[in-house]
Amino acid sequence: MAALTEPLPGTADLWEPEVLEWTGVEEAARAVFSLYGYGEVRTPVFERTDVFVRAIGDETDVVQKEMYTFQDRGGRSLTLRPEGTAGVIRAIAHRGLSPGEQVRVYYLGPMFRGERPAAGRRRQFHQVGVESVGSCLPQDDAEAIAMLVHYLEVIGIRGGRVLLNSRGLPEDRGPVGAALRRHFQPHLDALCADCRRRFETNVWRMLDCKEPACREIAERAPAMVDLLGTESRAFFAAVLGALDDLGVAYEIAPRLVRGLDYYVHTVFEVVHSGLGAQDALAGGGRYRISLPGGKTPVDGVGFAAGVERLLMARESLGVRQPPQPGADAYIVALGNEAVGAALILARDLRRATPGFRVLADYSARSMKAQMRTANRIGVPFTLILGETELAEGKVTCRDMRGAEQHTVSRDAVVAWLRQRR
Ligand code: HAM
Image (cartoon, rainbow, N blue to C red; front, side, top):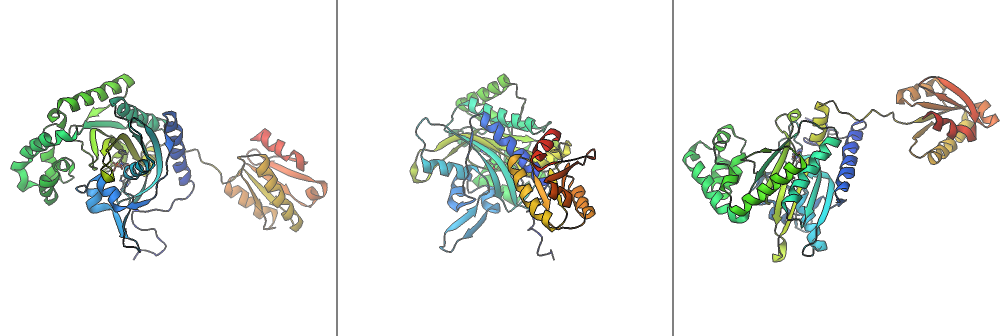
């Protein structure tokens, strides 16, 4: 039996220095997305179940098999968010969106899906995502894809492949669905039970079944773009044209449908060979989500990238944040009186040198023991307060990298540190 202190399967504790890798990719997301006019939004981690079912679609694996749904004490059905788009659209609808208004938001945070844990597949995972809502033009789609590519470049991920397809408009669903059914009909007996059900309820989902037998048949299905109406084909061509103008490389993936049913027109994924079987770093597309109360549906385009997968890809490429010691300076206090002075010196240094991380040792242990701790933390500077220093109002400052050492007056410590930083 797993130890009771172990995190649940598919979840993880995170510690430094790994946390620093996370904050690195999160900060880069903030920096890049804001260049494109996106601002941060934070929506609740749980919502009414209906928010997800309506947006994602009740014929999807996410809704049917993967949501963490529970009843609260009032008997309401609530769900831990399996993805970010549905909650963001609910929040925008709640705040109100005037006709013609565009809202560009990004989000970072945990999502929850009850999937079988594997490398790159978690039950609590984390996304950085964006939504450009109220935008209806193919250029918006191309810009979102270009921004994702820009972001991956900034965080050092090379070698991602952009896969692209179109799901067309709702009015294309009839003819496309009929063509796909004609393709799958003769093979129904060879398909998995899920696909036989999908044949009736949602034939698009048959295109991305993972079962080898189904896959083989799906690979021979007609390309979706060829089945779309004129308007959808023109929209897709305009997205491709804008991507060409921007110099973004892409591959058409004729059977890419994505696992969420809100998509119309453009769908895309970025895959990376450093990830193994779960090779999607990010996915997204254009969507049309209907709102409760019969309001006009909301159009938008967005994507989300899995933070765990971004970090796996970076690791496969040998990209790492430079390692950081746990502090920049360590105050060694010798004797009880020095301990009080160390407390005050630490406070003053933190305030006088912003960004400079200071730890002080209040144990009154021997010099050797305190220096051992300083070495273990890897601090570049130690500041020694002994009896003589206290009596003279001085501090002995040691640069641990070159073992240079000076005894300077207490007021000169900040200048000494700044010169050597
Ligand atoms: P998604 O493809 O379901 O799209 O998820 C986006 C990304 O989240 C995936 O490419 C993957 O990197 C990561 N991810 C998904 N599930 C897991 C998991 N179980 N463990 C680890 N990582 C995972 C969406 O969620 C859409 N909301 C994206 C979007 C935004 N479309 C339009 N706007």
